[in-house]
Length: 81
Image (tube, rainbow, N blue to C red; front, side):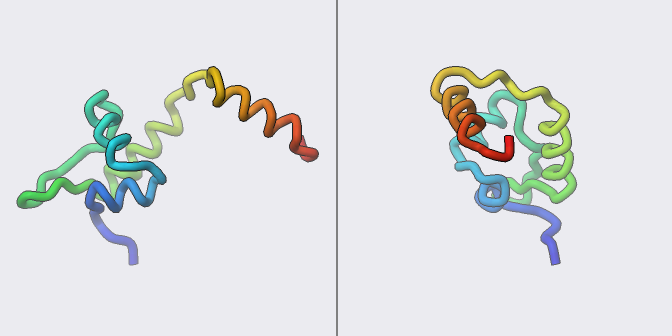
């Protein structure tokens, strides 16, 4: 059964990034909605789903530098492409 809320650590693990990235997103106003439960900061299942939905809708920033080079190399070596 899926939990109704996640700690910051659980949210980060589920979404594949570290807590430092999470707090950078929150500082930029790009993180999920947060709720205070006692002394803990939690993210509800609905807030996590809304955050994912909004990020899917937001256009990706163009890749530059090494990231763009890595994508180009991967595409060139993929026989299915």
